Length: 322
Image 1: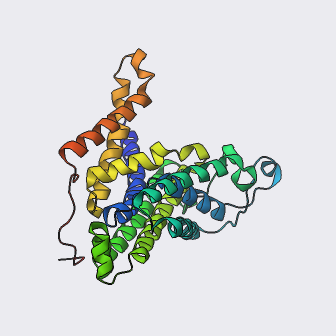
Image 2 (image 1 turned 45 degrees about the horizontal axis):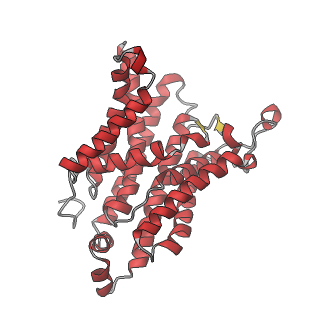
Image 3 (image 1 turned 90 degrees about the vertical axis):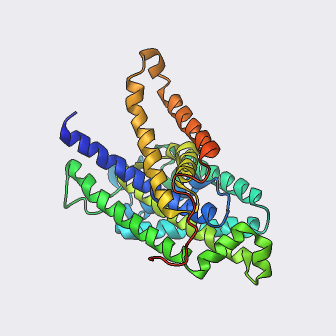
C-alpha cells in the first residue's frame, strides 16, 4: 500500500473515531455522570443527521425532484445544520424525559430504545419526509469548494476536531462546576441529593437534554462526512451498541476516557478488516459476524477484568485546569 493511501486511510479512521468520540461524550454526560440509562443513541444519531441534512440541502428540483421527496430544504450553512440538529435532539429528549425521568431508570431505557426504532421507521416509511428508504444523497460539505478530491478529508478532519474539542471543553466546564457535582450526587444517591434541596428531576432533565444535543451534533458531523444517509445506517449496532462499548472501554465518568475509548474501539473495529482478509475464503464470508463477536468478547473482557475502563473515573473534578 502506498504512503499516500495509508495516510488517507488513517485520516478517514481518525475522522470517524472523532465523530464517535462526540457520541461518547454525550453518553458520558447521561450515563457516566448522571446514571441515565440511554440505549436509544441511534435515535438521536438519526434525528441529528436528518435534521442537519434537511436544513443544509436545497429543495430538489428538475428531474431529481421527481425521485427525491423531502419535507424542506433550507439550503443554509453547515453551522446552522449543527445548531438545528442539537436543538431538535434536545426537544425530543425533553419530550421523552417528561414522562419517564420521575420513574425508575428502566423506563428511560425502554423509552429511548423505542423512540430510536420509531424514528428510524418513520424516516424509512414516510417518503414525503426525507425520501424514504432511498435516503438523501449529495449532502453539502463545509468549505468543499476550497479543496477538491481526496484532500478534502484533511479539511473535514480539522472541522471535526474543532467541534469535538469545543464540545469537550463545554462538558468539562459544566462537569467541574457545582452543576456537575450535583449530577454526580444524583447518580450516587437520589434520595440524599433530594434531601439536600436539589431538584433531582430538573437536573436529570438537563443531563438528558445536554447529552442528546451533543449526540445530535455527532449525527450532523456524520451526515456531512458521508454525504449520504438512509434509515438502514441507524441500526442499534452502529448507533448504540458500539458507542456503549467505547465508553465502557475508555472509562465511564471520564471525558478523556470517553474519547480514548472511541479511538481504541474504532481502530479495532476497522483493523479487523485486515484480520478478515487473512482468513480462509470459507470463513471470510462471515467476516461481519466475526467482527461483532470480537467486539462482544472485548466488552465482556472489559466488564470482567477492567470494569472502570482504561482510564477510570476521575476522583478530582473541582477545577478544569489544576
